[in-house]
Image 1 (cartoon, rainbow, N blue to C red):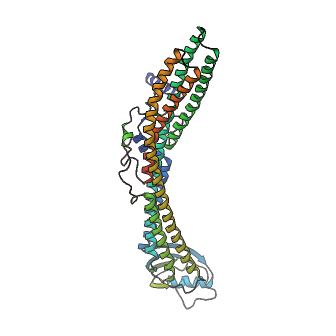
Image 2 (image 1 turned 45 degrees about the vertical axis):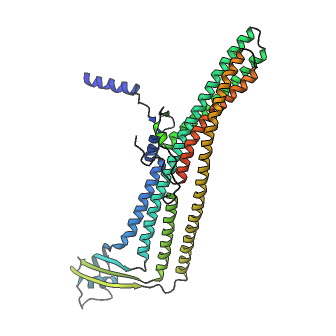
Length: 442
């Protein structure tokens, strides 16, 4: 009894005060690996691959003979059916009244085997189309995973940018609060006008309002990040403070589109469309099938049993079908032409995306250099201006402009650093490259 009570108390304690789980600390590489494994988009792509694999197996089923087993039992007094059952059971009697054979029952067991000898190339073309479809599905899956990885990278750095902006506005709020204290002391001492104090109070209120808005943007960025990972948006997001995996995200050494999954997928689709043209043309050719069957019949009313077999070859040749085969061929050829133009359009589009990504990366690198110099100048100017403000040399409006410039410089610097990493990821995505070739699992 005491043991049961102890267990119950432990269970109640765990229910009321669950153990606190240690929060996941995300590195960029871990976030990408987690999304590729757990995200719904990645799992949907895997299901599509399995569907394409099933289609391939269906196409290959034509290589094997088809075997069917049939069983039926019937009773009848219909003269034609009754006479046939009597013959099959081997109990024919010349005294039988053909017009009224009476009530007859029959149990029929039949085994059938069929095999396609020749189908005008439709079978091999169907297999080629299915194989090409499977390759396209696998490449589409890789493309989906690459896009997902890029979106995770983008969301990761959006969090960093949002947090840096929030930190910059927090620093600005603290600076204006300190400047306001100085202004109030100067006003009480009679060396400052009331308007100077009011200007700083208004600017402090505006900065706090901006801080609130940026905080909301940070929360939204975290929700987007969790959504991409397939996690509950109510969880917190903890990023690694010194994420070494960010440095693994490097620009590719050269531009090579030969392994781009989108292009290879479209090429596989053109191959599938070409195979479908061959399938349509196969309807103009004869179809040759071999077949065989074994049949066992038994009846209890006449107590008869008989068996029989049949084997042969059939040839079907379409002489005229109202031009249906011709139009099917035209339809398949038009679809093949569409895929060829789609491949050309995709090639041009990817070339454009690569050039845009290269230009964007070059621009972010230049922004890094510019913002580095700007923030150094803004910080030095702010230090000097605060000292001059304390001495009463400059007005509050001048100090507000300088503090605002410093805050903007810090924001632009933080955004430029994150944008440079995102631009690298965007270039890798445009080239069809994985962000991390072998992402480590968490």
